Length: 242
Image 1 (cartoon, rainbow, N blue to C red):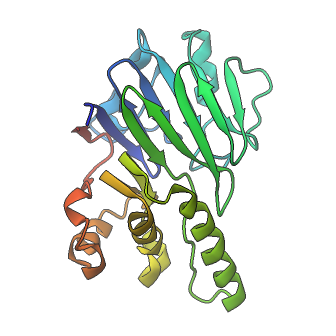
Image 2 (image 1 turned 120 degrees about the vertical axis):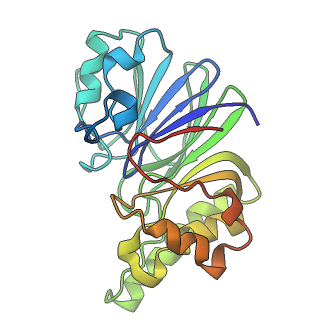
């Protein structure tokens, strides 16, 4: 696998620095972790990006996945590129790919494929510098306790239909929701993804500050076949050399 540096920002926010590129996914929390600054504190500023070939991805407009501040960075970084779900309002932004589901784009040499989320917006498959990256956005098996059975069944069908499009594919890095609010069903989305596709490294996301979810992941019998590929995250700004 080609080398990369990954920073965990918050919730579904990550950076991936490859040999020649800097990819930013679903960034929104601009308040740094106490006692830390910059990427080490889970935040990104234009100063961190100077001299880099930057592409910003935003899967949809929900506030925990997109912060309009990223659009202001083009004042200092004229070469910055954006891949934004079509539900995001960015009328004055330049170098923007307005992405819709089930499409493929070439974004400055990055091959980007999209899937339709089971919530809002998109999931991304991005290929750059020999790395194949999956970022789910809010594409997940959202099975909520107490919801009507027909709604949960429709969610299951919709999720499986999207993930089935990735059947047999192997990703170097996969960023997949593991949301403890789903209670007993917290793992269903990741587990189906790993049984349908595959990933060399898995970065769980969408757990906010509930880091205890990793104890569940590493003790859950369902993860026995792939838990050695799950990356344990312990704080915002944590850096991983992969």
